[in-house]
Image (cartoon, rainbow, N blue to C red; front, side, top):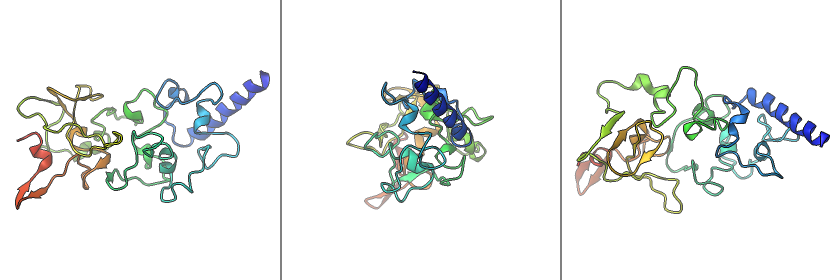
Length: 240
């Protein structure tokens, strides 16, 4: 029993040291009770991702995914060893669609630009950024607040009939039928998608960091030509 206590303490200390210098901005204990709490009595939670000895890389990573994902570097290799559409479809890597640009291997500019796997109480594990309060469907504002001017579409406003989306089911993580089209509405807090009736427009109504369309990472195409006529699907979805 004493040996087990010492081993667990050593693991916790090693993880605390490694993670304090890398991706973890939240407390290590925040993972318990979250969707990343994947442990069992015989295989503790931290061991799902990290080991203190013979680990792979700076994060004491428990697995080497270099042969499985040779095209990925930095944190993407860690994240997508599970978020690959097979272990879990949530947040899956979708290489044929637009994803938010990152700088692989650069702390704070990789997947950890937006996410911290230890922020268990955050919306989609959104990382805590000093001075930034956007931890909901207005996450874009954490970095892009200065890009929004008076000519931009209103957000944080209630959408009501007749200007409700015809297609509001964007969900590329659905299995097996992925859906890359739609403009979602949210509850006022921006933490839940509202599938029918009046609801709020947020940044994530039209823009998605994963599975988007074009450079603006739109949830629907901003231009389409049908039978020789010009259309704006993302606008016409609400403004029929």
